[in-house]
Image 1 (cartoon, rainbow, N blue to C red):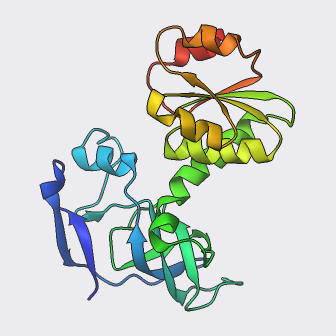
Image 2 (cartoon, helix red, strand yellow):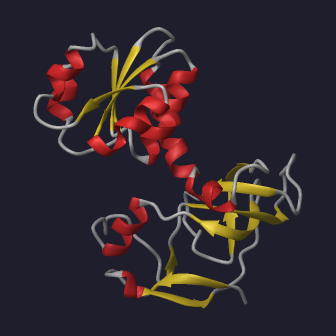
Length: 221
């Protein structure tokens, strides 16, 4: 029987316990991976603490929206992926905090990317790609990005710059150098941020990857 970190109830980290769990088999279009590393997302922490009990969790739930590892089994209908392949997976049904996880969404892990880095990518990359797709910002246009120093913001900046989009990145003082290195024009968070953005020119779209009280400024800009 494989082991996993199970959630024995809502609360602090102490509610998480290492315990045996039934081995799951991959279904249609799914793979099972032997987990090398699992990401810990803010949503995992919110779920564990019980802040969103409207989302029901089964008894002894195993958290973890993202994980990386080697393919251990493939379900019916899976093509292009074989046992032994290294992958990183987005686990919409959770289950990453375990020795084995079943995934429906995955991609091949490049050899140059570590297991730890690969496990930290899926949910942030999915968020960055999804929002940029919805904003539909074009090459030559300007994107204002709040939270450019976080995982979603870092990925979004690189994707946008690669597409020829000018990025103005609202960050804290400690992330200004990083924003420049990624190809963005940094502006400091805090009072007066809207004026500092306007000094750099008009913006075509706003991406709030921070979620911390910037809605009024985003609408104004």
